[in-house]
Image 1 (cartoon, helix red, strand yellow):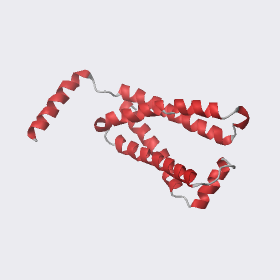
Image 2: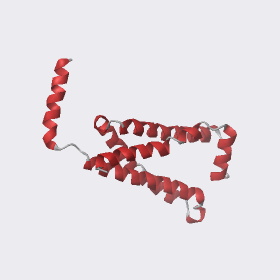
Image 3: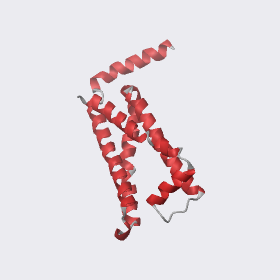
Length: 157
């Protein structure tokens, strides 16, 4: 397996694992309330909690859909894949800092570790994405040819 194939399969793995969040976004309200109660028993099911939970699930599913689309044409979507890779590196750092600073050691229950693993997994995916993007970047000798092709396309329009 070469780096380009690895990048394609990593994007597809991200897509496969995050698209399942769509199911959680459309759960019946009673099921969602039960799941929130399992995670944080004292949390009241207010409109804000319901909205935030469903929107976060939809965001995960949307990122999964984008990764699937990007995996089908790496060259075309390379700049957007870079954005997902860099974002995957930047988001977990403040998330982990907040997680550890807001939850005292006595309150680090199972939900704390689920969030920790989710943030750490996102950071690991970001590292892999960036490494694979660096390994699959076009060589500098091909770039002038690409520019000539773009110019010829723009002239034909």
